[in-house]
Image (tube, rainbow, N blue to C red):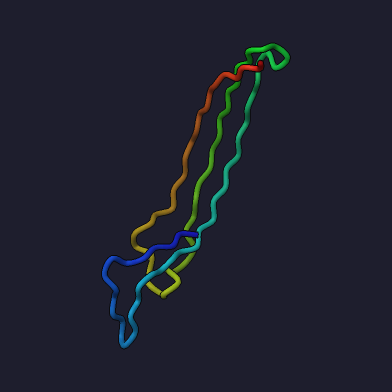
Length: 83
């Protein structure tokens, strides 16, 4: 869920709108591997794919023409030290 406040309130009909929001749905799937887990120094890597879809109009009924749906691909690598 995104929520924001307008810097300058918006007048719609007779109502003053000071803030608004938008629902979204996100998810991702990842796969990772770790090497040398039982030693003091281990190395890991992960790849993933995911995305976010924004649902319908804003809480105040405005059409969402700002936030596009998007997808992504991620790669993570790292080391861990055990002491």
